[in-house]
Image (tube, rainbow, N blue to C red; front, side, top):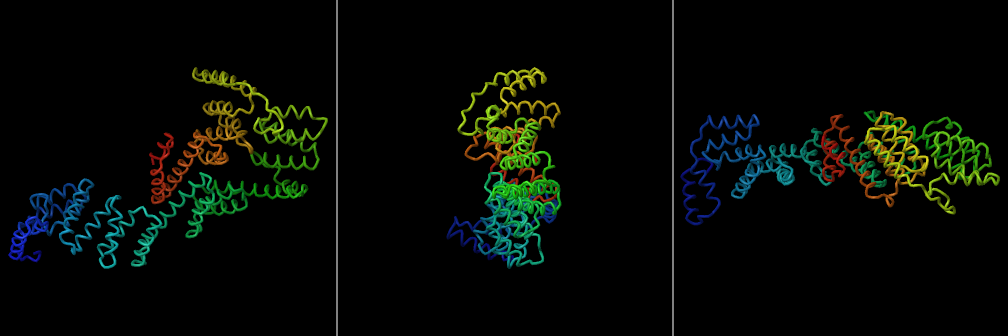
Length: 532
């Protein structure tokens, strides 16, 4: 029929029509038998429009060639391929091609075109890939269409065989294999950091380890392993991973280098703690002597440790000097208060001072044998401060909150109220100084949550995740869980933005797809990642 034997085609058309007038193959025979000679100029115009990517106009031009939407048989595949170039025409193209293939099951060209068209949209892409993959080894057109489809696909680990098969046929073409590896690495990283933020350290390490097995120099995966090691208290291993991560370069290398130094510090402090636990108190003090000039949180940690060791040694004057030095820097250092309380309690002549110190320690941190002291209600002062802020009087608000803090020094919400006012006035250092006591070792869940809220308002999502991870899951309420989820989403968004800056759109898209499957419920976090 397609060879031009119109008389034979007409004979079989009439014969089939007489025997089976409803046979669907009559459509193809009628189309072929009635096909007029086509206008070469119209056909050239249709093909020119298709080449330019104007698929809607091109489809209309093809329809003008054959006077309607039913294509001439020898132009059908060409027409449907063009029609599918526009999303609006894709369903009609797929339907038409499937009908042709049903009429002519052995028509390889129609099968190739249908496979191509199916890969144009995500909902049918895998169906098209399966069709093309079955023909690719012996059909170059199907093979090339399969390559493009594999580069469009959001692959899963189970798709490895597809990518391996293409690589075996084209060992010099590295693009497809590289795309699969990068996408899998991006997906594993996103999953790893998500597990890390949820506190599932074993699952997180498994994800990062899988990446490093194929790419030992992946900075993100090395950093992830470092964070997991730090969370589990293995500071030596954390230092090693973070140092390797920093050596890979990139926009986060300076942060990783700084964290590696912190991990090294705490690794040395851990060695000193092990010595102290073994009764080697002099060795513990010797190991921490070079660290005693540290400042900030690290300085507080080493000073507190040395004070505890001095107390255990019986060097009460040295221990008291260090405890009181810590409290001078931060009157709300509960660990220093506890240490000083135990020190004073050990000295019979200082029992009244020990009792006074005990009253300054939050109820949940006091020795269980002691009875808690009933607190003072500071909510009225906080409400007055809120009203003062509404009246644009921050000075009065701060005065009221200071009164509240004097009545309840351990109340984290007063500190958060004050820090927010200071931060709004541009006094970030003073605000952070107020919040810092809430982040100390042994801090209550409410204190950690308040500190995390303040960090979230400054978009410090890494700090938010770190603080929330310190609150046991069993003690997290729904608001805490929501903040932890928001922090995880924002960290993933930051990772996606980082990949985009690096030009790695594949890894960024993988992270964004994961976010889209379970988007954050917090409006600010949701708006942040939808802007990418």
